[in-house]
Image 1 (cartoon, protein in one colour):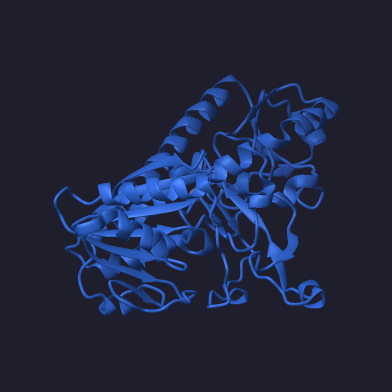
Image 2 (image 1 turned 90 degrees about the horizontal axis):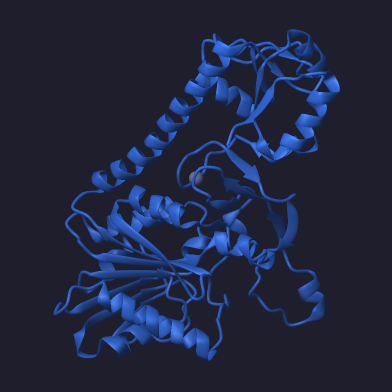
Length: 392
Ligand SMILES: [Zn+2]
């Protein structure tokens, strides 16, 4: 099975902690800094490369670079990421600035904080739109090159609990645009913002980041590059905010569907948001177990049950659904190295398709639906006539 290497369970999803994920493409060497320009062709040809190995979480859809090495990237003053000044982009900026101001309760002065403010273009836009409502505007970005002058203040730092002390007042709205996709551990990133705001903060947070569903739906493969090590679905962004202690996230698509825009609020305690996120994740898991235990039990009542695929997914499936090995009779795998061995915990024997055929299973659960066609061919060739049921 050529694609078998594409299933990995060695690392959990950084957002929802699911251990089931798929490699999107074969790993590829790519330039590390997409936005860095070089003085000579020779320098450009010698640009640093690193591995892009994108994995997609089967639960929340989050996509991340499993080979990402943050030490290869430096966001210092030489970092350039100017989106240009097209009319469409500027209209988008104005619409987002108005959304930010709407997130502050009417009548309240605006104490604005931006994490990852770049050269301050958006911060300046928000400050102008806020007019007399603006109380303060603070931006943090180690790549900031401009002056550090009031009324807007810029800090060439990352924002966290220690640098939060630099703020002259407490923010009631925090914005982070096109930053979280550069962070390998987005939950820790959001949680550090949440913690820096203080336990009693009720600040709004707005996050903008590319939408991986848009990238995939549009075949925009060029949107996968090294600097973007974390790419979100709406569900993944919702999870990440909840797990970080933000409450009631609302995620919408903006900029023609290319970007996600999330708004949430710092709650009265971290624990509430965290528990909310975890409860949902646990619900997903218990629903999976219930659904497949029922299905496997029904199949067992009708005859002998097998599963196809003795890899990590097969092992996990037995641990969740039939840990005692009472319902499932055996596991089938075409890999001769695995045949004659037994799955951990459940102790199910792993046998060849031909050996399975002689046991005549009436239902065979297929661990990876991607290979259903291939498996159907192999099963038919071995004379297995039972029903193939993909797990998805
Ligand atoms: Zn996930």
